[in-house]
Image (cartoon, rainbow, N blue to C red; front, side):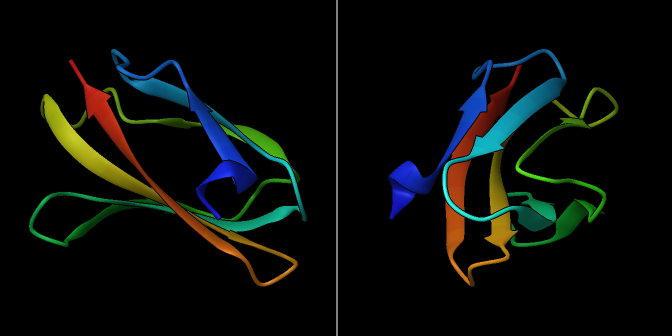
Length: 79
C-alpha cells in the first residue's frame, strides 16, 4: 500500500527523508517523468535520506523496495 512509507519534506529543495513502516528498505530509486532512473541507493535500513539537490526542479517518483517484498512509489516535488 502507499501507506507503507512516508517521504518528507515534500515538496523539497533537494534532500528527501523517507521512512518505511514495514520491512527495511532494500533499494531506493528515483525516476523522472520520462521513466528514467536518476538516482538509486541501497544503503538503508528502514529510513534514510536521498539527496536530489543536483536534480532539476520538477516532479519525480520515488520507489522504495522493502525487505518484505513490498514496493512503494510516491510522487515527490523538487522546487
